[in-house]
Length: 101
Image 1 (cartoon, rainbow, N blue to C red):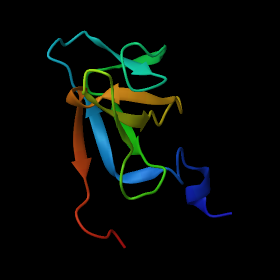
Image 2 (image 1 turned 90 degrees about the vertical axis):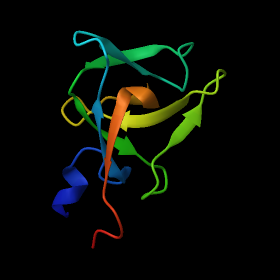
Image 3 (image 1 turned 120 degrees about the vertical axis):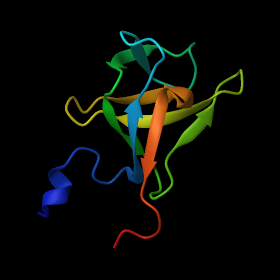
């Protein structure tokens, strides 16, 4: 079996990573089960945590809008393998340009 199959989210990764960012240094950035603050929390990250932006159909990453029109990203934490949704204004994206072959 190829090594990539054992990596977290190997088949769900887009070509983007994210870094969690908040104006409050000690803030807990909530990981939600769906797009919206009305969705149950599944955990949290902190400033500087790196996440994968996940995709049902790579290379595009998954986004959704909540009832207020805010955009959310589906993310995965590499160490814990936790997945969920984080509001886009709390994620700094780093994406590859072009086809990375």
